[in-house]
Image (cartoon, rainbow, N blue to C red; front, side, top):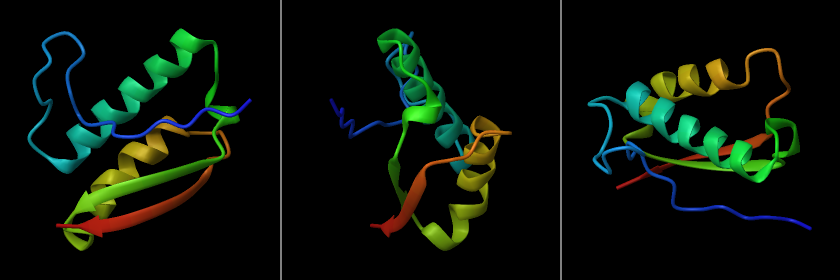
Length: 87
């Protein structure tokens, strides 16, 4: 069994509104929502094989998104990742 998740955005799970003004805050919210989904299903970050991250203005926001990513996978081997700039 494999599971594929897509379309995660930076929504506050309690209010349903967009969380955070910047790339770091939004990436952190997306990753927190994703970790909550994993917990709800009884899965772990170690089971993630591939992640695709889509970022508006990748050159300007990649460092902030990467900081949020590294905080989540602190000490754990992260999955393969593709980061794509979109408009």
